Length: 189
Image 1 (cartoon, helix red, strand yellow):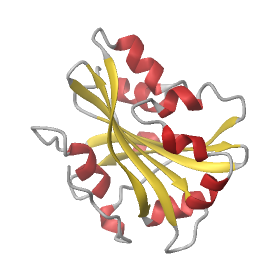
Image 2 (tube, rainbow, N blue to C red; image 1 turned 30 degrees about the vertical axis):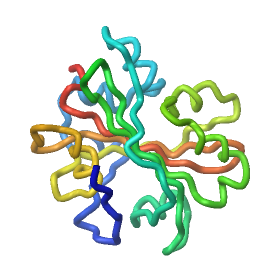
Image 3 (cartoon, rainbow, N blue to C red; image 1 turned 135 degrees about the vertical axis):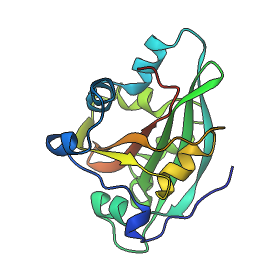
Image 4 (tube, one colour; image 1 turned 60 degrees about the vertical axis):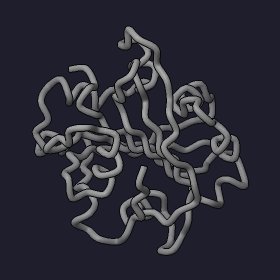
């Protein structure tokens, strides 16, 4: 898989909105329900999947991150983070592309264990934590010019006109991590 380096190009990033502005993006009712679902997306996939659920790691490395991710995480320009991208599969079909960003400084504290998940789901770990707090949630329709769309669509034979996604800022013991979840065309409606 080709790794795309994030840059500070505004037109290369989706326009993220909060739930009170989600109707401006006009997702259909079913997608809106998926986007605003507050429980574990991993658990929802496992419950909906009649085949075997699995997580495939696409990449995990220290990397520069894009402008809006830095802003949400409160990081300075040039900051690096541990970036992990995975595909969540139902059987042979990818349903979700997940892109997680953990600030470098947080790895020296409470979030270090999250870099050693391998093919385990981050969602299962997050939602079982008693010290996890879900704060900011934003939504976007990703278009082909967006770098996150390009990464997510890399696994698809046919590229859709757009993809829907959400990103959630979590706090664990006061340390932030950002999880982007991009719904792929096979995700059930």
